Image (cartoon, rainbow, N blue to C red; front, side, top):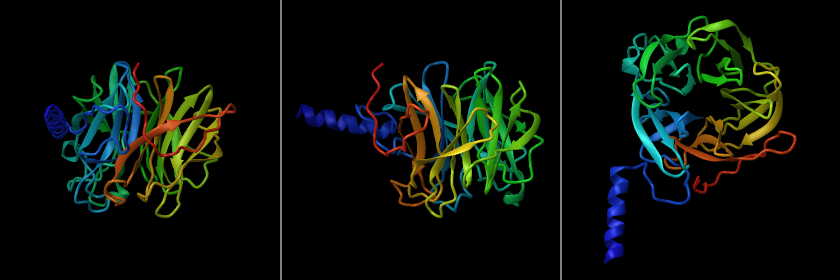
Length: 315
């Protein structure tokens, strides 16, 4: 009887708090109560790992209805907290009147503030009016206020922004879609471009989803390729955060969700790739986010990631 009662209570807790788990091993997808995609993962000063994904709204209409960004965090890679919604289209002062089109975001921390970067069109003709918006907060998962968009960009798809901050605290922003990716410096205020944006040279079959990180003096760029209906994640390396880049290979094979989008982060001594797939819905526009361990070779190259689950971190 005690076992039956305990099981029932556990089920009730799972229903009440869908991202809270008592498991000792993570299961992919690790967020299951809402559909999420395009995860950007970061470790902040409170030593928690935060994930900033996009949100697939059900029922979908392609990617048109994507909206209402949530934030998730963990301190053991198993038990995840949904901090709730931090921003939606109707809060964007310059945004598309019809809403939607809140695609892959990112977040950065500098000068005691969190900067949330998101792509969104400013007009009904969404394909021609993309901008990279910014919301700012003093907290990593609440209190974000939209403060406008980055000026001085343009000429092609302003989607999938990602921000990398180097060891010297210089911030760089990357974005792009189709066959073109650009990167450039951000000013100290994190909302203006410092100089000109540059084409990222040397990438192989670039589609979208640029993500830059650094390990042992090597800069890595992860991005998706153009494989039809099964985008892979590829990676390239450089000795400079703005390239030129040298293509090295496949980081993750296609995940069944048409597009692919990943972020790589170190947490408590291990490296992880965060990505999405269609494991729950079977549909490329109702995605769910996952993570797996990343391993490196002595020469800095990365072994292709295998999709599994992860053991709980007890530190």
